[in-house]
Image 1 (cartoon, rainbow, N blue to C red):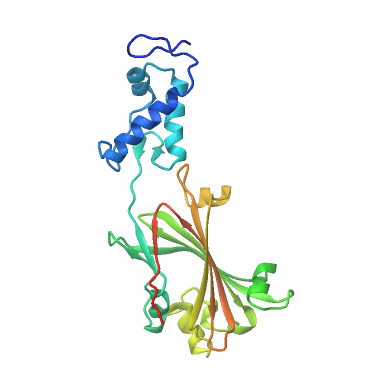
Image 2 (image 1 turned 60 degrees about the horizontal axis):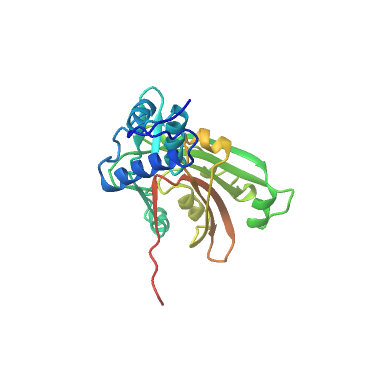
Length: 257
């Protein structure tokens, strides 16, 4: 198929036709002409507007999908991505359990955060977990897996590992651990965490994570590994979290001295 510009010039085979479409749409998004949540022109509209083949129009849209600027909704079309941030304030996580509250997320739209898909199991410790918790390689760990959900959309996957011998027969094994959560229960046992160490990494999601978090094309994840330590510097939990990077603002409050 030959492509023609709006002025009538032939453009078939000309490189960069899709780039022009992507650049124009990107500029319209940046200027606010296409606001967050607005519907983006579809393939047929772009074909008519730019005088290009459907493949070229599709490639232009794919560029912006891969950049995470637009998202496709099956049966509805393509829309400018909306960013409704969830603010995660790291130091407040320690304050939360010491006050026996359960404050983990600070959603700027006051949307309710729910915990779903919670499972509790005892399993052999993976090598990285045994090393981090300073356990023998044959040791068992209690594993708590769960998802965090806002508006029926998963925004975080979390898996926590505890030394099984430390928490066996305690409320940490229960689905409902009570006020303050697992850290408060560890404190009841005399092993409450007093400091945390977090490692953050941004990466593209695995196939399973993309499906589980229902991530749009071009969406990265933030992987956080948090280790909780007691006053005598004993690691009592490793929590591996996978966050939808398109949904979060990570805030760290640092002081000197």
